[in-house]
Length: 424
Image 1: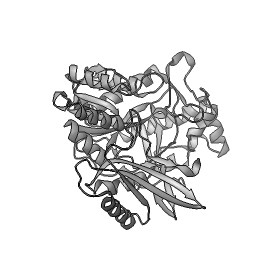
Image 2: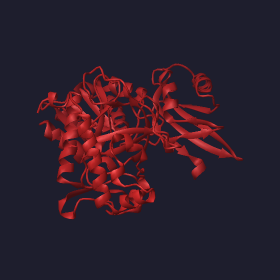
Image 3: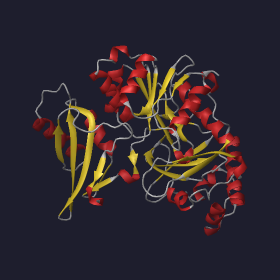
Image 4: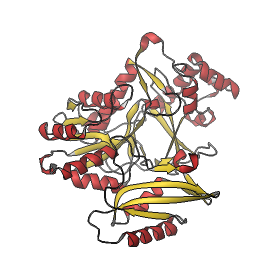
């Protein structure tokens, strides 16, 4: 398998139209859930002539999947289902996703595309730190690694000392994990004097949104190039989009999905280039196809073709989630807004935490940041500078607490950035 297999050619428009119309008909015929959805708005599959009619189809929400637990939205017969995965969420009923053999094969193919796009070859040794089992990440990455013929090192999550030992002893060249764990491993390697013994060259990091400051910190410590990978369990898992070596956006596989951007409040489609909520329709999924699934992730479709030469279209890096948005005194604030400002201030590190509080009916934000380990500026001076930048660029006044380097928690999974005490 060569990189050329994946570097070009989105499906012809007619093929995409055919897959789309076929999927709509399949859902109407085989899914009682979607048949009811269609009847509620007086819609028949014959009314859908092509992608131009996408906007009149109903949305699918995560709550729909939970309300149809465990497998009421499964379309393929039981004898065709070879695997079930679950979302990693910890609240409410889990979301269970059934996969046919073709689903599993397609997912492995998409993972292989991701690996090849960022330069992984069959000579690489790939350390896979995400979890295995019901969660999609570990087994999904392993399938992609093995498909291109690279060596997989399936360490799974946790046990940092063992991870670093494997990295040194096996001369790992590619690290896969969350960005939070990538940072923790890099800092622990530095602390233990192992950086000169580590042979990493690539980091494929995802499962959470992460900013440029964190990326720079990981790259600088490990001396590697990092790539942002995107996915969600409801739509296979990780591997449905990845950022290429030009780092101008995340390429997504439009022979398997339709991506659209909507206004999260009105549900109206937005033009390419406009930022909003990402909505995904599956084109080739058999076990549980989804129609206009609302991801709650905020991004935009990039209208320009990437300078890397691939014709697979791109979305921007995820800037937040609709449920991460904080509204203070009428101003909408996303974590990415804060990160954009943190990037411009060299006196602080990549790590931060946002505390949202309510006192006597009034909301307030406390932003906790770490002072850069090499900074000589006082905490008071850094806090003042950061407060002024946030006031000037976002338009709100917040409290800033500058902590010593490494005071904020590091995580082996995902870092919790927002603590909303109003919901306690």
